Structure formats: structure tokens, C-alpha cells
Length: 303
Ligand code: COA
Ligand code: ZN
Figure 1: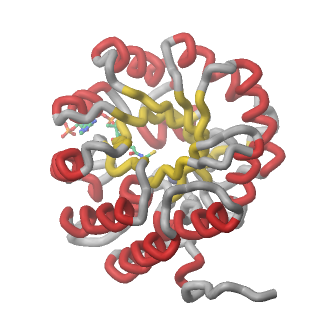
Figure 2 (figure 1 turned 90 degrees about the vertical axis):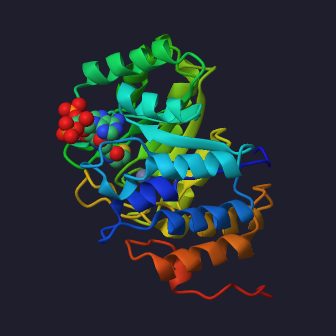
């Protein structure tokens, strides 16, 4: 296995989007959490979404957050989620050159999440590529392993077939998102194996939710299949607002602990990311799956 692993934090997008509080989380507080994540050593982050504020009120301050992070952290890999051309345009006009374009493998989740058919989503992807050729676009494939409405996919070839049009349209990176935490390690290895065989030049990332505590083993399965960029959310905060029953993400601090202990070079300092998680848990109420809630900073074990 490659010893260098890129940790891609998604909490400020995937975590914050589902927090239910009024008034919404203050922009300054979001920025403080982001500062702490960056101070711990994280270099890759999805930090907001350019979506309808009616769909996701918690991220209505995408513009302000973008302006702040772009000026503070010009050297970081900063991404915002976009669902359509309008979102890409709003991001681009602020100077952002990296976005995650979301489409669901499941037709019903694509409809529930972004109110589009598969054909409309593909068309919008092509429009964005044509309008902004210099935009770095990760394709976030939501419900890649199963869907809240259609269940778990038995047949991994559906994802392989689905992505062909996107590869033909110029996709270079795809993130396999387990939106509801339904994946298992065998399925992860099978899907990645098939995708690598079909599209050898396609870079793959993974995004697991921790519904049944399988986020870690699924991440390891992906790494054993050659993936070197893995997503997680601070505190394990999360859940998809448009996927009933979706639980938290794999927590960044737990994942960092595992990877660092295994000798991987994550570039992230465990004690600092744990502090960031504790800060967030204290300040922002929400659905947390991280184990820091129950366990104090682990001391070295002698046994
Ligand atoms: N940013 C901000 N506002 C947007 C927008 C964008 N990228 N795209 C559309 N809108 C606005 C429109 O202006 C319109 O506003 P109005 O009601 O004030 O006139 C409203 O959103 C609806 O626009 P429409 O094009 O008809 O979209 P829709 O109702 O079919 O919804 C999405 C489509 C994609 C905009 C909406 O479903 C969405 O934002 N989803 C976000 C999903 C998400 O983030 N899920 C979690 C992450 S996977
Ligand atoms: Zn997620």
C-alpha cells in the first residue's frame, strides 16, 4: 500500500448542511472550525455548497465562506459542491477553480436530492465543462453502493456503465460516495476493481458514512484497492437531508488515529484534529458518529 494518504475533509459541507439550528451556524464559527482543521494539517477540503438556500439553508453563506477561505488559504485544495451550472458559475465568479459536481447513481435519490433526471444531470455536467474548461471537477457519485429508496446494489457493473458518459465527457476524478453507509468491504473492492479495469486513467476517491460502523474497514478496503485520497468529516458530523435514515460520516479524528497508527503519512496531527472535533462538538449541535464523544485522548497502550 502507498504510505502517503490524502485526507479530504468534508465536514464543513457534508456535516454542516444537515445541522438543524436556528439561527444557522454563524459564518465566523464555521471559519473557526475550518481554521482548526487546517491548523491540524488537513490540505484538502470540501468546505461549502453552491446550492439553493431553500434546499440547504445552513450553507446560504457560501459566498462569504468562499471569500474568506480563498484569501486565507490560497495554497490549499479547496472545493465546493455544485449541483448545476448556476452553482458552478457562482463559485467560478468568486475565483474558485475546484468544485465537486454531485449526481446520484440512483435515479430516485437524484430526483430527491437535486430534482433532476440522469439525463439532465449529464447535460448539466457537459454544460459546466464547456463553460469553464479550467475548472477542476470531482464527480461526486452519490449512492454509489446503495440507495435509501432502491436498496443495496448487488451488481457493481451499474456504476461502471453509468460513469462511461462522464468519462467520455472528460471526467478525470470520481469520488464514490456511500451516502447512507450501506457499503461493505467486499463490495468496495469489487467496484473499485471493476472501475480501474474499465477506466485505468480515472482517479478514485471514497466517501463513507458510518451507519453500521463500517467506515474504517471500507476505507481500508479502498486503500488496499489502490485509492490514496479518502474523505471524512470532523466529528463524524453528517447525514444526508435527502436520504431518510442516513447517519453520520466516518469521523476524521478516528480515521486519522487509525492511519497514523498504521504508519501512513497523513500530514495531520492527531491531537490537533481531536481538539478541533471537541471544539466543534461543544459549539455545534448535531448528529455525530465520532468516538471522541465517549473516549478521552487515548494514552499510549503498553499491552
Ligand atoms: N444556487 C443558489 N440557488 C439556486 C441554484 C444554485 N446553484 N440553483 C437553483 N437555485 C434557485 C433558483 O433560483 C430558484 O430560486 P427561487 O425559488 O427563489 O426562484 C430555486 O433555487 C429553484 O430553482 P430550480 O432550478 O427550479 O431548481 P429545483 O427546484 O429543481 O432544485 C437544486 C434544484 C439543485 C437547485 C436544488 O435541489 C438544490 O439546491 N439541491 C441541493 C442538494 C444538496 O446539496 N444535497 C446535499 C448534498 S449531496
Ligand atoms: Zn456524506
